[in-house]
Image 1 (cartoon, rainbow, N blue to C red):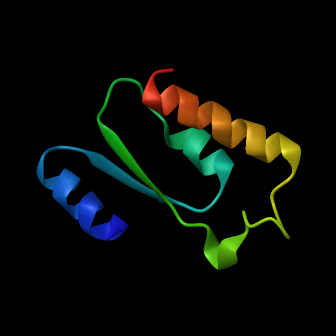
Image 2: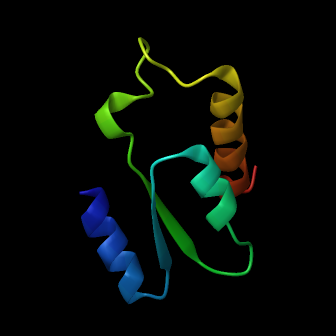
Length: 70
C-alpha cells in the first residue's frame, strides 16, 4: 500500500526516496521540494526486541517532527 501511495505522489510532482536508515532520511531531506519517504524497516529492526539505539530513535523522531512541521 505504501508503494502505491508513492506511485500516486510521483504523478503529482513528488520526489520519492526509498530508505532503510535514519542517516539516509537526514541526507535526502530538502525544504525546497515536495518529497515522500518510504522507510523500509527491514526485518522489523524497530521492534521492541531489537530497537535502534536511543540516538537513532531520537534522530528519527526529530526527522518526523521536521517532516510534519512541528
